[in-house]
Image 1 (tube, one colour):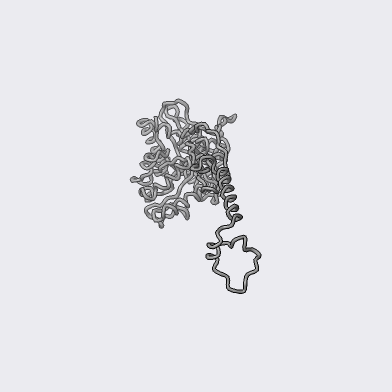
Image 2 (cartoon, rainbow, N blue to C red; image 1 turned 60 degrees about the horizontal axis):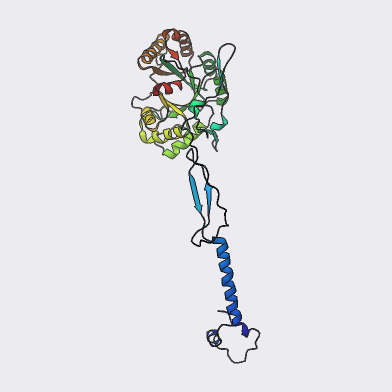
Length: 384
């Protein structure tokens, strides 16, 4: 406790001074000290009134408008009492307008003088997220998704049966990739491996020839590691975090694909624990998935239906019997399934025989009342 102001500067006697407490008790507080306390009390009250306002029970707060997706949620950040600068109350904001879950926006396509369809260049900047591993697909702010934006135009208001064909293994062989891009009908969808060279250049050429593009996701087969789908394959032995990291690497190899298709995956596709997080990630990034039916017990279609991830299940492998008669027989089987169910999908490889038989078959398909359609068109057909 401070000494009395009256004692300041006084010469002390040689004798020992009494304790401060006793000295203060005898003399009592000085008028100057009392006045000082009163001034400080009044000043503190004025400052408190300025900071807290006329309602002492109200804390100052800062309100930030944070948009989380379409809902436009609002979060309030409360400040500690006495630490915030006074903030003027903002006028009420109008109600947030919710964005549609899916915006059906498609990049424009043109028709060349020779009648071929040319798809617009990719990627759409609205659908790209730049990350440390590379560009990844994302849902645009307007709700648009890659599976729709990057699609080949679907037949308009046509109720005829549709067949989609997906040719995988693109990007590994320059000769086979170039042959498939140039020779196959533009409605045929092309799936590129993540391990190929010059993938973005090939994708640009494929879309210039009218082909929508998919990404092949290597997945664990039953005979792994004897049959190895590559260093970044999705494996049942890995944690969901490790598989997600691998998935991001695979998705970053090129841009402009509407969705993915499994490469191998007979074992991985049967494991719900391994497959679930991967498919949830694909849905969150606005993609579709094609199940190549490499496993009879595949859970891809089942899980996709549960989480509302757009999907297509392939009915058969076109070139499982690599002979002209074998390929023709599989194409005929696709026709029968399409007539019976309204649509069907088949998968194949960019082999010269496969390309030649598909090209010849497609020339007469329309006369049999069946449409060759991009695989994305089957998603809409499945919902009708």
